Figure 1 (cartoon, rainbow over the protein chains, first blue to last red):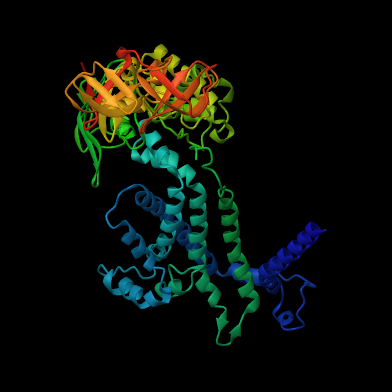
Figure 2 (tube, rainbow over the protein chains, first blue to last red):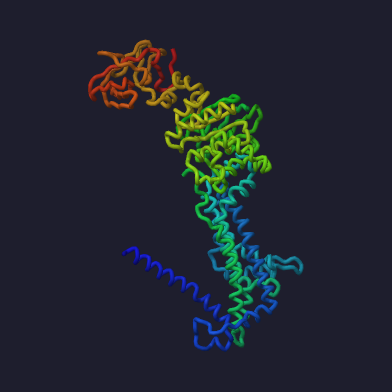
Amino acid sequence: MDSTRGRWSGFIIWTGLTIVTLLPIYWMVLVSLRRRVDLFGNPSLIPDRIFWGNYAEVLADDRFQRFMINSLIVATSNAVLVCTLGLLGAYAMSRFKLTGKNNIFFWTLTNRMAPPAAFLIAYFLLFTVVFRVGDVTMLDTRIGLILVYCVFNLPFALWLLQGIIDGIPKELDEAAMVDGASLWQVLWTVILPLAKPGLAVTAILTWVFAWNEYLLAATLTRTEARTITTFLAEFVTVTGTNWGAMAAAATMTLLPAVIFLALVQRHIVAGLTFGAVKE
Amino acid sequence: MVSVALRSVSKVWDETVALKALDLDVHEGEFLVLLGPSGCGKSTTMRIIAGLESATSGQVLLDGQDVTNQPPRDRNVAMVFQNYALYPHMTVEENIGYPLRIAGVRKPDRAAHIRKAAERVDLLDLLRRRPKQLSGGQRQRVALARALVRDPSVFLLDEPLSNLDAKLRVAMRAEIKHLQRQLGVTTIYVTHDQIEAMTLADRVVVMNKGEMQQIGTPDDIYDDAENLFVAGFIGSPPMNFIEGAVEAGTFASDGVRVQGAPGHDGSVTLGFRAEDARLADGTGMIAGHVFDVEPTGDATLIVVQIGSNRATFRADKRTRPTIGDPIAFDVPPGEVRYFDTATGQRIRA
């Protein structure tokens, strides 16, 4: 009796939470499939007719494609760079005796303690004035954005990956070294495969951070390196908001993130190190 | 086959001295066991030989060549770790083949070596499994096969059996010994288990507090201990000690009088093994009261209170004295050992 009740209450709670999570997304899709005139009528959860015009309008805009590609490049490069540097840094922090190791960790983490907006002016000046060679600056470049996102994501990656690498028994490194492996071979053949779940989590979170980030992208880019989030904001104008097109663009923006998540998620396998050493 | 030599090897961690100027020669093809309590420096010694730890001072020589500053990969030593250290993301086959893969041996060439090593430790049926699908004993075999696969010049085994249950330990012990004899590879084996040391070793090194206490054959170590530590560490039950004094060639303590003690007068500890004592009728060399009786199946261990000392005697399995009764024993003079109480060193005739 109790277990039946427990199952039902669990079912109700999870259904409720799922609806709360998915309803805004469903609503967004719904809006993207409606004509402007239908939007301001009686709200309904079921569309009576489907209108693809909003998607056509967004897809026809060449800026959408360009910014989408920018976003993909920035987010993916950021994820790759953060995972690579994070793995190397976390391995060093986990395995080597480094002077001031704890201070390094705290120092990198402080980057996450203030809101990114606090660094906005500093970054703008760095990008326009300090990092300037002749006419070349970091402003409005993809590499600039990638590096800034790295600054924000690396502390998190270090923190997460160090925990993962600490969990990989040091004996495995030693066994590999005695078996003839160099440090790089240890990293590549032993640590990397075992840290895969942590790397997958890091990749997902850093990728999504860069994909969704608006503030820094809006400030540090102009025309060339603009990302898709800044494009979404353009549907809000002084003369009104183009809700249908905005929802269509947002729905299409969601897709790469869902695909990326689906691809990476299967690497999150817990308990992979089980059986390595006798506890 | 390769000889291993340590020349004045020391290791200091921060303020703690883990090894004090250790000199050690391991002969080609020898099975040497490093034995001692935890923290005695035996594992550190092995890790220095493997190159996993650097010596604070001194030299490590493999076949006369100084390898002190060489990384593990350049030493061609193989090591079996206490907790197996198998790569969990690889199958048994990949685990065994790992040293060959790292050495750049091509995949088709690896297979034959892997099969040969797996065959030696009876693992052929399990090649496709992953470590987590194996029992403790099977994992230990994988670790052994991985060490065997590339014909190492030195075999290092760091308490390889301590995580196995008692029955399996005895079986694996015999296998390791058999394997070593077959291959003839110089082997250094670390353990805190004296039975393992006695049964496996050509020679045993007893260590304590970073220092070598004695090196010798298992018989030497058991019968001819150099000091109180070795005498007390080896044997089950360990050697009995009775503290007393020697005066004019006679050792005396509460309930004990033994004539023919060597050395000068002074504080002396008398030692003898439980199995060397014989139950005496009436008065004996050692007299006391029965404190406890411990039947072990094949014999009876009688714990006797002798003044302020306590000693264990091994008697026939049918002997069952009553607790509290007076009891006396004799020990043949040749089986009695004398140690200087202050220094712990053996006093020889």
